[in-house]
Structures are given as C-alpha cells and as structure tokens.
Image 1 (cartoon, rainbow, N blue to C red):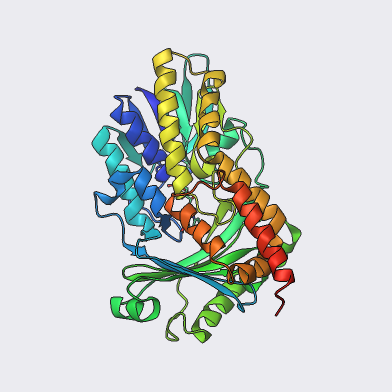
Image 2 (cartoon, rainbow, N blue to C red):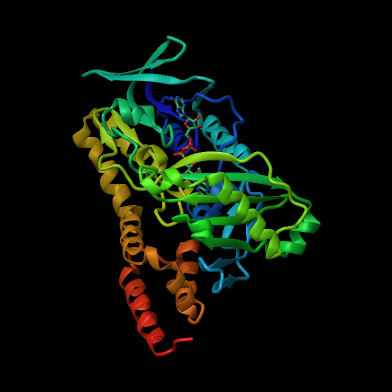
Length: 403
Ligand SMILES: Cc1cc2nc3c(=O)[nH]c(=O)nc-3n(C[C@H](O)[C@H](O)[C@H](O)COP(=O)(O)OP(=O)(O)OC[C@H]3O[C@@H](n4cnc5c(N)ncnc54)[C@H](O)[C@@H]3O)c2cc1C
C-alpha cells in the first residue's frame, strides 16, 4: 500500500505532523519502533507558550500539573534568582502518557498508526520514497518525515547528518512522591529549581515537581566529543547532586536514588533539514533550545510547519528539495532565529553563569525577560538587543557595586 506521507517516529514531532496532515485529508502512516505507550527519558517540563500554540493539549487530561515559579541557582549556589507568578510558567507532563495522548490525537484525525515497527533503510526514487523495516517489509510513500529522534536513521540515510558531533548528554529519574510531601517541599505552586553547572558540568541540574512525582536530572549541553566529557562520571555527578539537594532541604532526606536513565540530546540544528521527498522534524533535525536542551516546543512546532509545507507540496505535485526548502525557511523564521540568538548569548555569556546570576539577583529585568520568553509573551529574537543591553548594563553596574 502506498501512503502520501510516512512518518518515522511517534514522539511529539511525528504525532503533531501526523495530526495536522490527517486533518487536511492526507493519507498518513505514523510508525514507531517502540510499543506504545512508551516512556522517554525527559524532564517533562513544557513552557506555557506551547499550550497557547497547541490548545488541544489541555483538552485531554495530558498535563500533570503546573509550575508557578522557579529558582535558578548560580554554580557556587551563592546567588539565586527567584521568579514566582500567579499564572503558570510551565506545565509538567509524564512522557509516557503525554506522547501516547498526542498519538491518539493523530489517530482521531485519521492517521494509521503502527508501533513496534523499526525503520532500517530509506531509498528515494524519482516517483516515490521506499522505507524498509527490520522485519524485512517495506512501504512506499510520496514523502517521508524523519521524526525519529536524536539518532535519526532517516537523517543519516538521506545524507542530512553524517556524524554525531552535536550531541549532548543527560540523565534523569522520576520519583513518585505523595502530594503532601510535594506541597511541603515545593509548595502548592510547585516551585522548580535549576542548578547551573552543578558538579562542574557544562549544563545544569533540575528539580521539576509534578502532581505525584518529582523529576531530578542533569544535562550537559555540550558535544560528547569534547575530551573533558570522557572523564566526567555522569552517574557520580548525579549522585552528588541528589546529596546536595538533600543537604539544602530541597528534597526529603529519605529519597533513594532510583533507576536513572541516560539519553542523548541534540545541541544545535542540522545545516539542512530537507532533501528530495524528505523532511526532518524535532530532535532528528537538531531543533532544541541550546540553553536548556528543551525540545518539545520545537518538535511540535516543526511537525506542524512540516505538515503545512507537505500539504502544499502534494497539492502542487512537487516533492523536490527545492520545493521542500521552504520548510527550513519557515522554521528559521518562526523559532530558528531564537535558537541562533541563544547560541550567540551562550557563546558570549555561557562561561559566566556565576556573574550573570549574581547580576540578575540584583535586578528584576533579567527574570522578567525570562518570564516573557517562557510564557511566549516575548520573542527571544525580537528582544536580542534588549538582552545584550541588559547584560552590559548589569555588568557595568556591578563594577561599581562589588561585594
Ligand atoms: C533527559 C532529558 C530531559 C529532557 N527534558 C525536557 C524537558 O523537560 N522539556 C522539553 O521540552 N524537552 C526536554 N527534553 C528534550 C525532549 O525530550 C526532546 O526534544 C523531544 O522528545 C523531541 O521530540 P521528537 O518527537 O523529535 O523525538 P522523540 O521524542 O525522541 O521521539 C522519537 C521517536 O522515534 C522513534 N524511533 C527512533 N528510531 C526509529 C526507527 N528507526 N524506526 C521507528 N521509530 C524510531 C523512537 O522510538 C521515538 O519514539 C529532554 C531530553 C532528555 C534526553
């Protein structure tokens, strides 16, 4: 059987693309190598701007709880910036439930879903794309979406990604916790914590309280090819992080480290995210916030953009890379400029987290900007000059205010 579009990978990117394509009457096959519902190592934090973009998420009970505030700690833990609002900053989800929920939206829209089906090869012909599977079967389509995550086979096989030099690392564990304990440690507002450069990592540790869980993780948003990384014992950093959290009474002393899971993160977009009859979405395209490693927003956004471009391409009978290149033009305009701005800020200020948090702890400007970005009220790219001006202003102000 031939489909209009085959989507490899049913994470947030794939299932969002599937839903929007099916709603347009396009014949879609969404497949995943895992049996669903499947879990995915993740913090499960979703900025509220995502809920504004994809209003249907809140229709079905996919959100666990909301976070109304956060505390960002400097690498030395001497300084901190607190933010608390009456409106939620972020929603939290359990990925097993959330991702399956998104798949169900796609199925409801008309998508055919196959799980336990692992793509092994992709070949592009003048009149079709052909995907072969590990079970020796194959399927044909007009277009293939590679939404198969950070180690994307579709990206490799279509020549869009050759090596994995832009991959970071993360480990995480989700701990069940009673609501009363959560209320005690994180208040009913479910205050989250971020500890920058904890244990010397080039990233951060996080504490995301949910409805009946607390999610504790660390991530390094730097290439695993970096030599220093080889020496870093990530598991040990995690263990000492949990110990620090206990000593600082952020979490209960009785919490026992559970079964931690490691997973890779892309750290910057691929140069090219399309080819003849192929589009890459989400982690497969390296679409991630380079400051935080968060990717659910860009995964869903890129899935929706891909659906619109593909519908037009099928309508025009043109599935060449020239036509599909408009996908990259659109995502770059939508959120790619935010990624570029963050990469530049990271390069200039990334090593200065202690300074930045020290400065920000004395001035509400930065935390208010962060609030605007998280809620989607402000666009990072549009505020780039404001960010630079604010950082410079605080830097010089600090020269006259040494403690
Ligand atoms: C530890 C950790 C914590 C994170 N925390 C957050 C967070 O709090 N907030 C946030 O926004 N982001 C977070 N992220 C990032 C986020 O998880 C990803 O950006 C997001 O899942 C990307 O969605 P996706 O659909 O592109 O890929 P994925 O969710 O990875 O889905 C890809 C799917 O493709 C399937 N697949 C892979 N290969 C094949 C194949 N050959 N054939 C068929 N199927 C295949 C996989 O089984 C998988 O289901 C975190 C990541 C990690 C590792």
